[in-house]
Image (cartoon, rainbow, N blue to C red; front, side, top):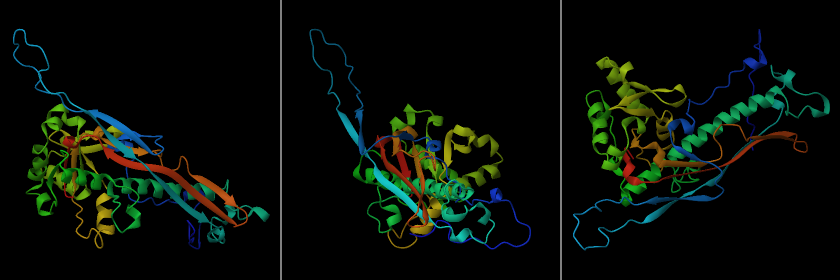
Length: 338
């Protein structure tokens, strides 16, 4: 197991204060709750959700002296959300901090290896927590248990699950397997997004107001739409505010949510190998409350352990949590690009 911090730059000239260390986070990722999905906590293994079928066409013209059912009823079916145990763990020895600006934060004497209660511990937990939060966000979307890349095989994530549902005919509308760069250029971006709005099932189209829906898109699509609105001179009027004061674009009244780093990870981790044909232009148009994420970790470091192992002369960071994903109703999903 390698060090969390592997080396520290040597110091020359005037030194910054310890607390002025810049923790370089990965590209900003939103908390899952900010995406509007339903979050189910405290699931130990799995949880079953029940849903009724849609009952319609039960009213007929009355016939005298006629009694009995006027239509066939509907069944109550179930959806099972299973969660997988996840773990992140790294060790840290004191060596990288010696002869550096951080040396003053080390303890003295027999306890010099122990980083518990020091400013270094605070720094380590911040770096560690940022990485774990990014992992959860990345894996919820991109995980696929059939892949060869072990960074993505713990459970099936959003893209894999939605595509499987569409191919199985569960009502999920798959507009296109691939969204090309031409589809989202300045000539075609509005037409392409209209195709997804037009593809909505009547349930998604009429049961929810535009502001109750979300159009989740990868960064190239979001930027193309933003550029188009800027060209048309209506960028500011095309924005809306989501929870926690986050401003985003809207299309046909539907908030458009940028999935930020997801496209970057597609290009980085799926350019070769399996699947080698991965495309970073992806769209999900849906009711966000149709999607359930099971996890007991909503922030980055709330349950991270940090301890010193005297016999190893090492410190350890560990975070255990559970994660999984499922959606309730296929007819409330329109997807493309995967």
